[in-house]
Amino acid sequence: MKALQRITVLGATGSIGQSTLDVIAQHPERYEVFALSGHARLDELFALCQRHRPKCVVVATAADATSFSQRLREAGLATEVLHGEQGLSDVASASEVDAVMAAIVGAAGLKPTLAAVRAGKKVLLANKEALVMSGGLFMQAVRDSKAVLLPIDSEHNAIFQCLPGNYAQGLSQVGVRRILLTASGGPFRETPLANLETVTPEQACAHPNWSMGRKISVDSATMANKGLELIEACWLFDARPSQVEVVIHPQSVIHSLVDYVDGSVLAQLGNPDMRTPIANALSWPERIASGVAPLDLFAIARLDFHAPDEHRFPCLRLARQAAEAGGSAPAMLNAANEVAVAAFLDRRIRYTEIARIIDAVLSQEPGGSLENLDAVFEADTVARRTAVQWLTRQGR
Ligand code: NAD
Ligand code: MG
Image 1 (cartoon, rainbow, N blue to C red):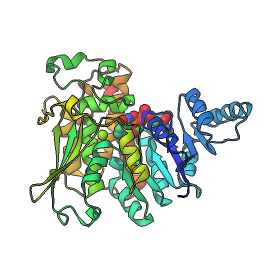
Image 2 (image 1 turned 30 degrees about the vertical axis):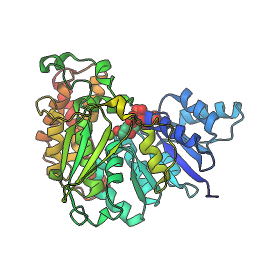
Image 3 (image 1 turned 135 degrees about the horizontal axis):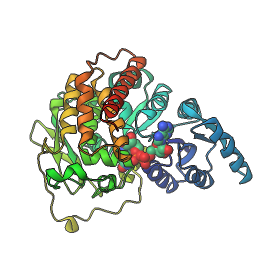
């Protein structure tokens, strides 16, 4: 029998966190939850602790930790409660842990994800923002610590599955011509451009194919998500931005493709359910059941493909520019996008102003190289400050 693998799930209360726990619960003979983290929604975190009985749980603040400990004790649970950034990094790097699901949303996930990488863990990367911000440093840390980095983003997991095992030798060495990154086009793929000014957060979060957290749902609507994924693909697979082409595929059945020099194009297909890439990465290089229904090609009947329209999706163009500029530009793009999306979800700005804020930040801030993690956080801080100044100037 295989040794039980102990898993830390960072961002357990989120969409990816819950799907991960669903897959883990289907295989109690293979996986055990070591630690869970949650930032808000403490009732849900408590229910997860009752169900999965982790050794540790991480909450946001010392005050949350005190009240959460009390609640666990009253329920007869011996779970140790940690808090804050240090607590997250501790459960990501603990010696008992075999694998870490990095599923915190946004820049907040960078330090704990890097802690898991530096401790040489098997790291299941959902938190794309961490890699976008710190790309070269992150990948160097993976090489130095011999961590095993497995992509959870459905597109990158698909590409990973379509590449040969020795792809790290270089894409051209293994005969890859291009990576084709698929995108659904989100809920506003066909909305008249003039109507985009007035779309609401509820409309933006109503994704046609995927059920996800609110931030990534807005990113999918603007296609900033695809822009972040383009940068993510460049780092994961050592590709140039020009080697990654974005293809709108509204059915979200093909999760991405790899185009080889001999004319072969390999694709990974499946129902749009994150439990497939999660199960793939958890059990890699083996395969386990995920609970996802088999793909019914007859029910799907057709697959469509379109080129993205840059007028409709300016965030995608801005992300490509940031990818080509390199250095601190992707970290700044990410930070500006996080501020803009939060303001949109708060109804302080219009949907169309998300791209305007990113554009303003990238054109005002000169950017530079990223020598170390301090430089990454400095770029993040500068971009957030500039984005907030934009909001203030507009009286938001
Ligand atoms: P979500 O909003 O549903 O969950 C986010 C999780 O992060 C929650 O557990 C929350 O408590 C935690 N969190 C939020 N702010 C935090 C902070 N400041 N400190 C610590 N923890 C914090 O998000 P999600 O949809 O599960 O996405 C998680 C990550 O996975 C994102 O980076 C997203 O881009 C990526 N991803 C998600 C999907 C998907 O289908 N949901 C697909 C691909 C990639
Ligand atoms: Mg994705």
